[in-house]
Image (cartoon, rainbow, N blue to C red; front, side, top):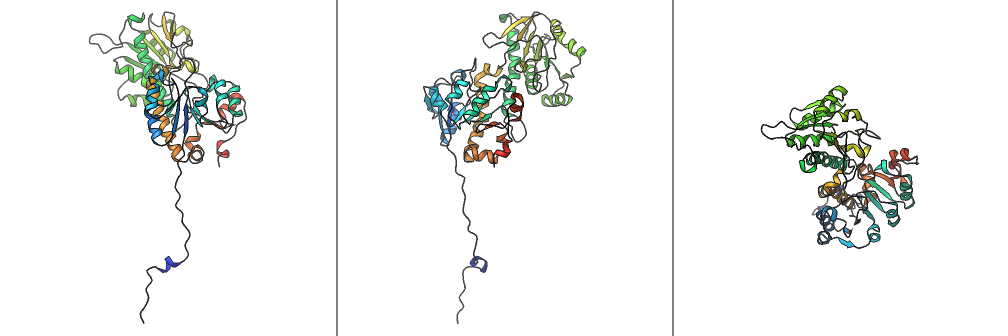
Length: 399
């Protein structure tokens, strides 16, 4: 009798658990890019190249007419990239996701649909309580890109804009020193036989680091002051060359200020920038020297500083030129736009790949770091304590 051999093993003939292939379903994003209405704000969140990348992935982008003009991007650039050009703000604010540089005004919040996802800066210290009440009434999920942390614990948008501000502070100072701008007529340096200009930088953070790099690159003599020795060490390692550094000792700082041609204030505090340079210290500076207070958005670290604008950026006090514009990156709107866009685009594409914002928030703890409202519920401790508003832990709301 011939034996029958089964092609299956004994294990394969046993009842098996059914295995279903699960595939992530990508979410289609509808993103609105409104024109900025804040005073002298010229940036936009996405470049035409970023819009092209998003539309090729199947997402829809609506751009308000003229939104990119401040950064030298035309409506045609965005249209050719696949965006729809809207000729009224209501259509843009009617999108499921709204991307803005500045926080929306109360009037703009009225145009936002309920349950919309808002991505913008927050600028906590300049806000009022009614702004947060308006977001809550619309049950908006709000993300502040200045709160977003990456997996290394860094704030990529804040760091990028600080790099721009640090580099720009030296370029601005060099421009103000020219005779054409009624400056002292000094070039920063790197001219044979001519002593280099002396630059003093207060603060060894990202702004201070990039200000130092820019000043050294132009041949200036640089001194950096900060009370954090670890920051000063990191700065020296980053620059990869010997540089004068010191803690904020009044006598040493005063001597440096008496000799310097440029002073950069780049130190920040938790709630307000500490005043490090007093009025008396400014009086000791050379006539015609230039002062750029990058910390002015936090109140300024120099006692004589007063807020100025891009249209009227400077004033003189004690014969020292003061530049105290809070929004320096907007002066270089195209560079700042490209920088922000390069950070936000992968962030948005990743969210779509995860199946939308809700799915992404559940899986990615880093994405929650930027959220301060979730469906109208305040989730940020700093905002709650600053405005005396009740707040909830986001990890308890997203299950």
